[in-house]
Image (cartoon, rainbow, N blue to C red):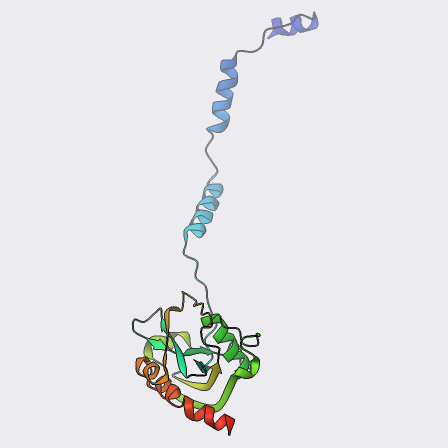
Length: 212
């Protein structure tokens, strides 16, 4: 060390320090143990990233609509549920919030489930007909978990919607997997729910009453 200091004072240039010493310092610096709190934080972040993401949804409102979509010739559109084999039905759906107007619920559900836009040039708003009729029924046991504890019955309001023959239908794959247009009696026979079938069978009478 004294020799190196003396050489520096005399202005002599010294050779670079051996690379081995630098390499050793590097190894020592990066091989130091990670503090335990850092390890714990890393494990926590990894566990959170790997944990399944659970989305909580508010309970469904036990008030809904059913919309019988039909043509002028009384061909009726029915759609097949994705979560239950063989379950054919009309468009149905619950209110999004308590004060949502029933007509708005019906138009929204039609758009979400079939892609048909109520209020468009092809399907004007007046094509949606509120029958001013409602039923009360027991909720299927396998759907009870969607509602608040203790809720076992639902109130359903019936509508119909006349659309042009051949209108495009775009399903939401998460909810429905297939659709078919059938004469109204055949559509009623295909429906899983007896009340849905009854609504379809009432279609000619309801439309006649509207025109009277």
